[in-house]
Image (cartoon, rainbow, N blue to C red; front, side):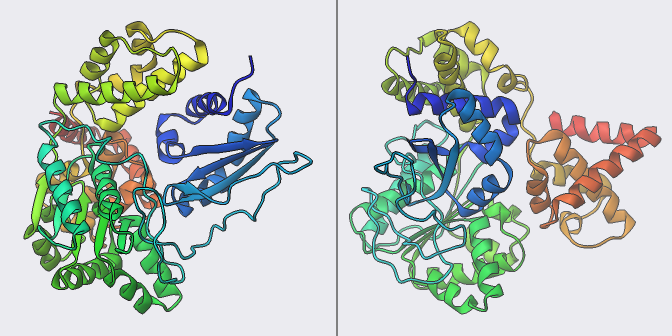
Length: 479
């Protein structure tokens, strides 16, 4: 029996996950979606232009190879950027069924994009500003799909109130700052606020930006001598949502501070999300940190067993509604919720893996299948998740070097060695990539991180005392 396009895509994703490994797959392929297959051409989409460019430059052949393995008739790929949750241009079948494009492929260079979307996905008119656009919203991340529990109940309540107030042109809490460790729902809430606030009034200017997108726009504006247009574009918004605040660095962080002050003074709503409280955002000056702290700061706690089970159940219900005959027994739901204690994305990933295993092999979803399929997600479940912020605090305290000195450009020996050790521990104890670690260490390049890791490894091979010292730091972090 021939497989349909969705089944082929599930198999292709499974092959890519095996071929590149879980970390690479999560970084570059998790948000890659199949739009359609026309003739011999598969149309894929991603949420950002950066991701589109990176995949085209590095992984097209690997993706195409996975497609050909599943369906040898597919010989070409077309990759586009999703705009407000939709991929454009679509593909059409021509009379000769050659699968050519109806319109030219979407350019990789930045282009104007409406900042607001409604709940129906319709775009509101926007003033064209060269090279400016909001980050794409995920249509699946709404209040309806958010699973609530004791850990995130307050954050959800505040998010709904902000969305309702913004829809009625009212500002309640301002600014709102939501923080938690990775994968606990910050991005979901920011997307949900944008969708809900724009549902009733498509004329409102709502902008959702990730920190890297904010930096990209600012750097591009400076490069093209259009920084004034960038500032004016941001300061005309009614609701600004900034995600992954911890990645904001350099002059972009200064510009954010100016924008924040202007919007709050003009009674425009600002919502920010980050992985640490405002007081720990060292890349911001004291005035901006104080401004964020003076608003409403909402933490999201790690998930308790009841919330983990509710999330797994919700994702399993969504999967069974898509695939005929699929069944998630209660024992499997309990097993996944009990065994995977890291964060919500791992729970989502666990359900997706079980779905893929079921579709690829035909094996029913059982506890033994979960044990076999989810082994790597569970291997560290008894070890607390180590954050780079924790590493910086422990290393700074141990070597009596201020945290801001470790993040600075100072190159004296008493600062360089602790900095290198902290980078080594970040690589060894966290799942962060080298570029991510570099950004957390004052915006350094990934090659600097790699050099530090190799340098510490070399020193440890020659110095037993240093090895014991680093092992002590490791145990302190893992306790």
